[in-house]
Image 1 (cartoon, rainbow, N blue to C red):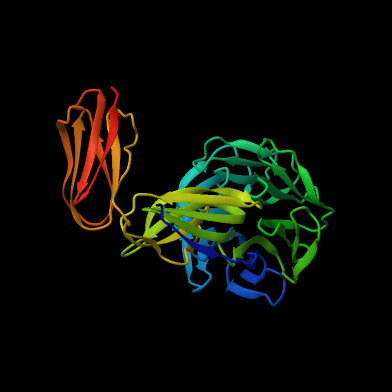
Image 2: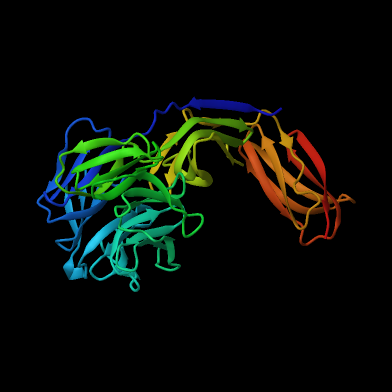
Length: 467
């Protein structure tokens, strides 16, 4: 008789919203923040910078990185401790840094140097500086990172360029993404709709294009802009985009479809780059996580109702000590539909086990989901010998049996005449579930029998070797 135990956990999650919006004020020499919904007041994160240009937030470490074009520096500040760490300067060959983007999962930082006309890369601590695009650029500006397609995007606003390009992380496979632009500024990638968004202040518009086909077909999102818009950032989960305008001295918000335009934060002398920080770094809604035990196998099942940038789930198990990784299940990337997942943990010994999922996104962010209770793989309630598998076989097969108590066991193989050809087990074993492999390389094709003796219990089954 099969034994089933079910443990069920309902996870109720609320919508995931951004916590703060950040920007550089090039006139006041500040990095500032404000609650994402526009409520409350503006707070100075850092003052006394020369002229901040672009910035980005690493949600895995709560670090904000920014470029200072006037000071020729790239630095970071921890948003919790407010510790400032200089990373790169003129001494490292950094002359005119503008756009910046990070790939936290792979410890990479990308930026455009407008003075040397390069796209460069380093580690997140500023080591290992590498030119990834060093020729053919005129006036590179804002930069965006695309984990979904493994690309780096960069705008070039120079004479004869006026376009957005992209390349692989090492600078190879440079492609034109959006061409024939007028005055291109901020760019941002949306992993939900696979589109690159950008500001064309010469066309007084915010535009987008799906990068599945290049060059993209330009779509106007917002038209009739009359100021001098600069930076743009996408809140993909909540379908919002935010942009700065240093003529109207404000930050505005609209849906990614261009509706519900709102003047969100006002009175900023010269806002340029803009970034957002997630209250929850990994926007995936897990609705249930449960388990079922069948003998010495545990089946884990879970479901999501929405996913953003979801790479997948690391399955971890603990019996004694710390959790250890036992498998990985691919996620669905970006989705607003229900997705069901499963993982089976087989051939476990008798004992109690804890399970958890480590959900990871393409940026390296992660969040744990724990199964509510321990899973118990109990002692078998009777002796049992299973049919070998595969059968027929060549040359290796598996034999499984169950012991309800500690006992001396013999597992042997015989030919059709009753002659013993192999002893697989001959020893005292503890109660539990067992699997042994039998290698028939040294015997000929034909029918054989394997027999289990354990105290008064004896069982025999037939196997077939085919060579």
